[in-house]
Image 1 (cartoon, protein in one colour):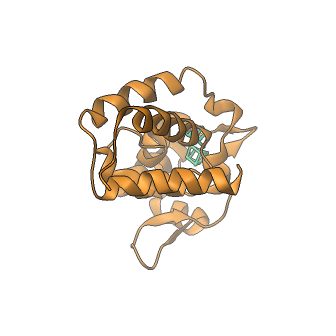
Image 2: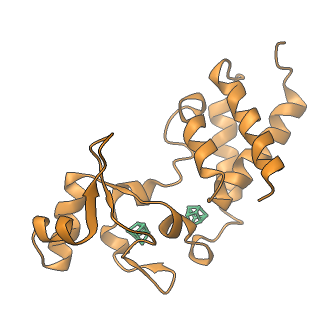
Length: 160
Ligand code: SF4
Ligand code: SF4
């Protein structure tokens, strides 16, 4: 992605720190539904290659049971605890469960993976920082924010 485009989309997202146009939640949901008709995650898998999920205790329980190993074996083999947040994350990238560009534990994957890229998880202004970070790697987020920018900038006058 061109750095200039990423910068301009980040600036657009910054505006939501201060003000959110009426109807934004509905617009995001509508636009999100549209972009998923065009994005195929199985052709991409960038999030599995470039980012680590965070593992909840329930994720670790479920996946280690699925793999037939103990929770400790699972953590010792693949995870580390992030110092700042205390979250369990992958030691290395791409994710150890990515095989032939597909998730080999898809049915029991971490909740964070199942929910990614979190487009409609929270109200838009609460999640714009996350979107800024994900613009770099997630084509779906890039498409969503690009479309929103066009729609919002055409129909909404930002206060100066
Ligand atoms: S667990 Fe599966 S979906 Fe999650 S990052 Fe790893 S390969 Fe991707
Ligand atoms: S980076 Fe985005 S588009 Fe690519 S696989 Fe992950 S969620 Fe799907």
